[in-house]
Image (cartoon, rainbow, N blue to C red; front, side, top):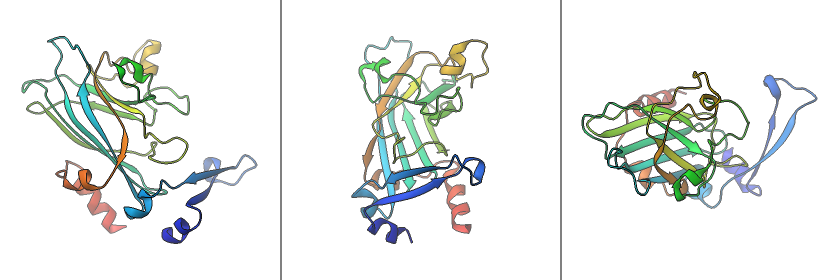
Length: 222
């Protein structure tokens, strides 16, 4: 059925109904399939983000390197994320927040990446790119996540935006100040990257991460 849809002018018409019911406020949304990738890669879009530390970090901050990988089936699949980071101290126990920010502009480090990507103008931590908090094991962060609110296609695609690693833990919007609702008071931006479309090879050759194998088993049962 998906192949038939894609043989049309690579456009899917999706009727989004508020609260799951038909109403007068129904909105017709046009979602265009990314091409040629959606045809070449079995209706699946892949993206990568090559993480590097911001310039001129003080010695007290770790030099974080690695990849954040993304995968999503067009048009209705849930966005999956693999996080593979290294460069933290082996005994580091600091929780660190990772978020998707609005702009893919790292011309001045991650400051120019702007605020959290927040197309619906809601309070944190309900932003589609709020990945959560992570702590390293022996200097490495390896995690699998799902981001139901984010997309690699359509008008609110995260392609071309930035992934930012922060120095501190995200308070998940539970703080008493306004910054908690904007960013979770996660502190300085110490590493980041720009999200770009790629081939399936990086995702496929990356070792399965905790949680990913269970997700594949659940999918096979559907």
